[in-house]
Length: 533
Image 1 (spheres, rainbow, N blue to C red):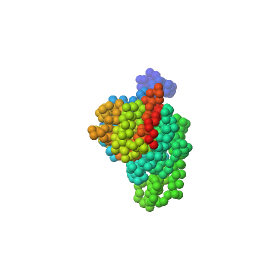
Image 2: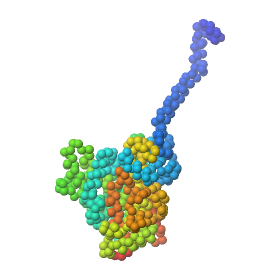
Image 3: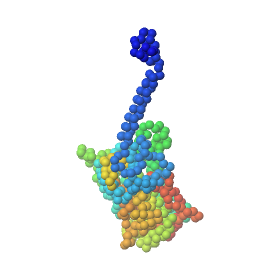
Image 4: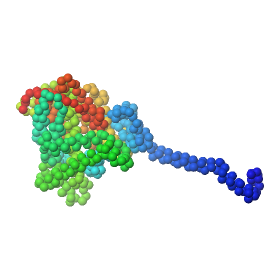
């Protein structure tokens, strides 16, 4: 080997020995190893660079929680409502929180919420799985549709529901029989501890049924009880594990079907949706056979008239078709029943917890309404404290504490920040409703929050947005307010609401519900005041 090292020409024997040396010497093996290691490191570096640029935090994003790629910031031991409060406390009234690959913007200031939800770029409904499953992931209906389809659907619904009484005193003729039905059901258990039974849900649903399909159900009708049960199940499922698919939509394509169905309850939601659609379709077919064209009895008839008209309009941007009608019917029943029923349950609990307020409301009713009848809409102007009490119920309950999520359709400036296209916007209405900036006694049930210096009730007030605000404001606000006024005034005229003997109920949010503020389950006693009718 010395000759080789000195540069002398080797013999064949020496050449064979050299080749074997090169082949077997550790240096050669180390070179291959180092080369492979370098390739791996370069690949990792390339991946890191890609992730960095793809996962880069957008410029001028509101301060908040960013977290890791793919999963975002999801690691916390706090309950969800506490996480929201903590986010606002740490980062202010406009904060960001990335969950999965989606950026959520939480807005907690009333003025900023008003500005944001009034912006056309924020009128889009969030493309959540838990929303779109009800419309079969089509841009139809009212609640989850967007663009021209939503604009036409909302405008059409508002116009024709008003034609059939929504927002008018004529609706009283529809609501009063339901009020009497509820009072009769309560009377069967007066003086005994009781829950607010399905009678309330059916009574509220019947009002919607009258407007939409011109039909009514008895309290114990199996069809309507099944219908109501499905709506309740859908509300429950929407607040469960299925929410993961809203923020991690790719999970739907990789999780086993038993997880999607058994854990997330997607199969139950699909079953309820399909069953209700079939039921609605049957009702529509009955209307087709019995209706008189251009002489509508209800929303379905009006829609069918418009559908016939639009068949001859090739330039129409609104899809008037059976499927859209079925989705819209589902939207109206879901949005117009459980929310009002839940708010009424809050009112009952709050009256039992605040007997001094209840007594003051009853004194006002007794002074304004003759003993031989229940209150009607003409009495409304004389029941200002009752109206203020109902507003305080809305404030205290904050049934949709984060509103209904919106989505940013284009990069949008807000209060010096940039809200990126595709980000989710949530209005922290609960923070507004309990903020001392707007309320004298934010944690106290105090109807005087809504009484002005002239003793009149204020329905619009800074910091108050129970029906949202802006372009997506609840189209059923006037209906809900009318129902709550008539049901509440009649029940409080007839009964005094008390906690059961030896018990003390609380009017607090059920912590097991993540999205909607349902009151904790309770029983109360309805004690007859005076037989007035």
